[in-house]
Length: 180
Picture 1 (cartoon, helix red, strand yellow):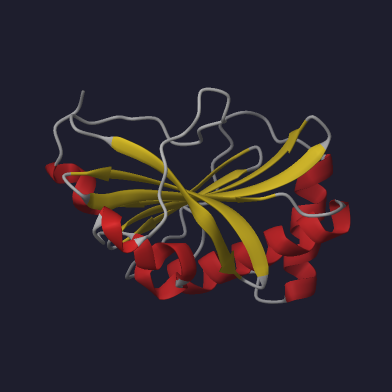
Picture 2 (cartoon, rainbow, N blue to C red):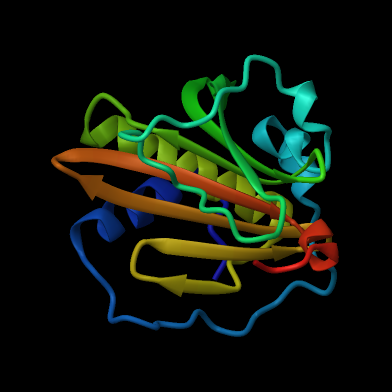
């Protein structure tokens, strides 16, 4: 199934906000002949494989701050970064790096209301589908894509009554790192 219409994408996202699928639901194995590239989605993906210093004004997380990224490799650093503007919306930004190379980026937006959350979710889903093809996996409100240069996850959540849209991007450079 291919969703190219923004209206259909918005409808799909709206349905997923209100209904939960059984855990472990797999999408049909319709994989594109050739995987897309994370770099083609722009925005946060442009930070992958860049030096940590290229982001600017990074700071370590405080003890009370919620980390979407957890250290996973020897020498892993997780930093909070200034907000990023992407898809006409402000996103909170976290980056993870090993040996000064950013391998994972997490962006999270808290839209003003349900309609804004559904529209933003549909825009992200549509962009990822256009650039990366159909999701390779779906579990409840998490969608995963494989790409030539890494992977992407779109997560829709409700935290204390706030609807959140989170995008996690991971470069395949992680294959060269030593696990903790």
